[in-house]
Length: 415
Image (tube, rainbow, N blue to C red; front, top):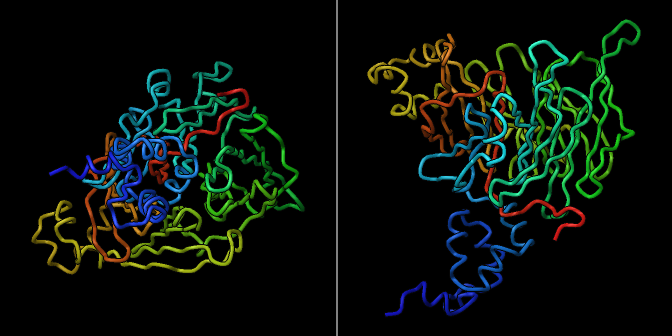
């Protein structure tokens, strides 16, 4: 009997299947895992051309990531690292792009953004004009871990990089935009305020331009805000509020978080289904997930999920048994003792309803590692992801990532 694979090889679009080609092309194949798609290249010449070289198919695959190809990315001592749930490997053969891993030590790398399969890092070289030769992040590195393509981009003249990466393969597969958020502290009528402006780099022009948009807030912002891209808009998390910029419309503004942060809370902004902004907040005894409604910059937050830590512990005793003796889980006070000894923080929210949580001792040791859990918001199931993730000191930013077959936009003059 002729094998199924041989039948598929002999029929480019698999006509032996009862599934119409349009359904297969637009609804099934783009939702398969990256590893499965790479294997299916050998089915036929037409499938190989579709998976390897069709930009529209690559855009569809980027916008419909498979859970088996998703996880999160961060900077470790070895460079850029990826992490995903067990038995669902991301499938990147070598996470760190060779040029990054061989030419630059990890403390000279700063992960700035992850958008639709592209990553942006700040690359630093020693600056001997300062004591101790601190790295001056004067290069930006945009690359695709899947296609192994990369662009080096000169950064702006400023030492600090608050950069967001805007890339929407469904609308502009041949262009990405970098936006550097610049801040200036001022005092107006005796009150401290912060001015924000936006330096914009387009892969089309390969030039930095200064936007005429300005945003003034009644706050003296001093943190290093990470950025995410959702619904065509870039958002920077400034701890107490969000700064947003729409690169296609050249519009900017600010908006509050769903609930005012306190010293007892942690939060993380992210993207849901590729286009909806999310904000995950953890309090003393619960976690809440909010989504942006009625437009990308409406400021109208709606609570989508809410879960108590006590419920997480009681429903998943086999997971939390690793934190103490299993018999202690029967005690109702175990959750309180757990939270008094361990610090929980949201790491990232993937394209579905999986929330990654970092757990580490409140009494930190010099070489302490962070344990990573994955919580299914709909079912309440908790999965143990890793026994220990060691972030670089002061570089604990985590971004969602999924394998995308979209390549970097080609520069003028490239073939």
